[in-house]
Each structure stands twice: as structure tokens, then as C-alpha cells.
Image 1 (cartoon, rainbow, N blue to C red):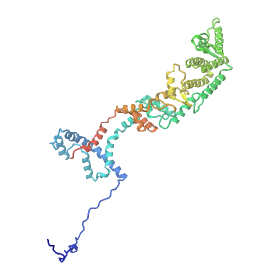
Image 2: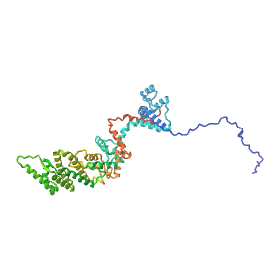
Image 3: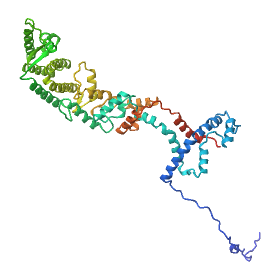
Image 4: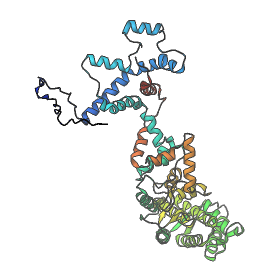
Length: 484
């Protein structure tokens, strides 16, 4: 096939746009405003706006939820279905579909007076205000649940302990499942030192740590004080003391082995023989009997040594009871030394209590466990401590009731960590996870204890949560409402 030569054809001319008319105005696109981070005042204003509109609009939101949104959602009522007399009356009187104004209605009313709603960027702050106004009245109940509600007795004991200088944890004071602790978080050392000081002060000498050397020194020092009080004098003792001495001398089979110790038995026999000699005189009926202080103190020292040397604490208590009967008799019949004895005897009794606790491992590393002290005193068959301002039985009661433990004791249950966690989770599932909550929320410190005291001074007295619960429900329900 022959080809055609087109080399002589003219080159096509390109379109020339230079002759087109230039538009008089350029096309302008709207300016895009850069994002501005909301300021703190703007956020606070949005929160306040949400609180006000949420509070005023809550009744209308609840009304709309009950009569419109919920029935439509459940299929009981079709959207747009003819309204009843209630909505007809609302539209006629107020120009809206609810008798009470909704949040949207409040917004419109605000715009009419120049109050514009917050911009979208601060919608979270606004929602916070709406929720807060509904939850605010519920905060006391929430606070009580977090820190725990004490009984009247536990609160009174906690306040007494705080008067003495202890820092107590709310977890120890609450009525539901109190937790054995060393006190408020961060105050274990402070509480331990305070416990050691108060317990030792009851013996007449305050120290920061209590050990066997301290107890031995107190017995020795107090023994010398009794020596100085008794020696070189003649004392009258009455019938109870005579009966105690007679029991020592004549009823050895019913007493521990200490009654057969020569110094004790010999002194008792001498006193009883002298008393019998006096009582046998014609027409004599002595109610008191004179005894030399030196003889009384020799017998007393021998009894004390026997009590401290025996490993049988029951026998030791019997000995101390006899000593106590004699001391009481002297105090009753000698007013001139009653004041000195009333101060000296409690110190001696408190030292006996601490020695008993030390033997039962309730004092370790120089630190006393007030919980163990209270348990020991509560189970004791003998009342060893007289109730004066120097006694340590009050410390024992506080330690027992508040479960105030020593530094060497574990806090909480003695169960394993896994068992404790499982038990805490189990109680949380049935609504009693106070222990777990206090751990997670760190509400075991002194600040939480102050909150607990605040609530304790303000009894609940039939708190009505209907209104705050309604406000909270309205706030939650508002996003679910159908469009107006």
C-alpha cells in the first residue's frame, strides 16, 4: 500500500489563551480558623453552665424519658404518635411537649437573655457540671462508704486513742470488717513509740523501748521503795490479811510450792502465832494486829522473788494476790502512808502485767503489742491492775478494740496474700468490698480518718437520695432522648 507524504502540511496552531478576558474578582474561599485550646475560665464556665441547665432541666428530661422515649424504645408507642392530654396542655400553655422544661428548653431561654451555650470543644466540662450537680448530694454517702462508718463505741475509743497521741486508721475504726493495723498509714513508728512510752510510764519510768532489763530494773527499784516505806515501822493489819497469812501457813496443800519456802512460811507462822496469842486472851477480840514493818517486808520480798522465779503464771498470780491483800490492809489502816501506797502499788501491778506480757511474747524487740496486751487482760481471771491514771489496762482495751498492732506484727489477716485478695474480691462482688476499696483508694491515712470523724459527727438521720438519684438519672438519660 502506498504511503502519503504529509511533511508539507501546515503545523496545527496552538490555542492561545492570552486573549481571554481576565475575571474582575478572584474566587475567595472562607478562612479556616485555627483550633484554640479552651482556657481554664472557659472550662469552668462550661461546667457551671452544665450544672445550672442540668439542674433546671432534669425534671423535664425525666418526664420526657418516662412518657416518650422509654415507651417508644419499648415499642409500646410509635414515634410521632398522637400525644395525650398532658402534651396537649404543655404545648398550649408553654409551647413545648413537656410540662417541665428540658435542658434544651433551658438553653433556649438562656439564649433569649444573652446566655449562649458553650462551644463543642468544652462539651466534656459541661457534661461534668451536669453529672456533678446530680451526684453532689450523694457525696456524703459515697464518702461514708469509702472511709467506713464506725460504731459509737469504736468512734469513742478511737478519739480517746487520738487524745493519747496515737494516729488511727479509718479501717481500724469502721464497724464492718475492721482491719488490724499499726495505725494510720505512715505512722507505725510514731504509734509504736507512743505505745512503749505510755505502757512504761505506768511503771513509774518512761522509756522508748521495753525489754527484760527494763522490767528487772523496775522490780528492783520498786522493791526498794517498798523497803523504805515498810522498814523501821509497825503496821496494823486487819482480818483479810490475817486470813491470807493463815492460808499460807496452814493450807500448804492448796497453795503452790512457794508456801513451803522457809522465809515465807517462817514469817507467816510467827505473825499468826503472835496473833493467836493475842486473840486467846480473856475477852480479847482483836480486829487489827500489829506487825513489824521489817518482818512484813522480808516476807513480801520472799513472795515477790518466788512469784518472779516460777514459770507457772497461775501460781505467780496467786502470790501477787496475797501480796495485794497485805498491801491493801496496810493502806486501809494507815492513812498517813495511804497516798504513797496508792501511787506505788499500781506501778508495781503494771510492772507485773508487762512481765506477764513479755513472757507471752507480746513484747518483742523492745516493742509492745497493745492488741496482745488487751487480749491478755481480757482473758485474765485476776484483776491485776487498779484503775488509776497510771494504769495500762486502758491501753490494753484500746489495743484490743482497735486492733492496734506492734511493728513486728503483720497487718490485716494472717492469711496468705492470695487468700486475702480472693476474699476481698469475693466480698466486693456482694457489695462488701470495703477492705479492697480502702487499699485501692488509699483511704487508710490520717486525712481519711479526719473525714470519718467529720461524718461521725453528722449522723445520716434518714438521708433521702431520691432527688440526687433523679438528677443523675436525668443527666444520663439526656443523650438517649429522641429529637424534639
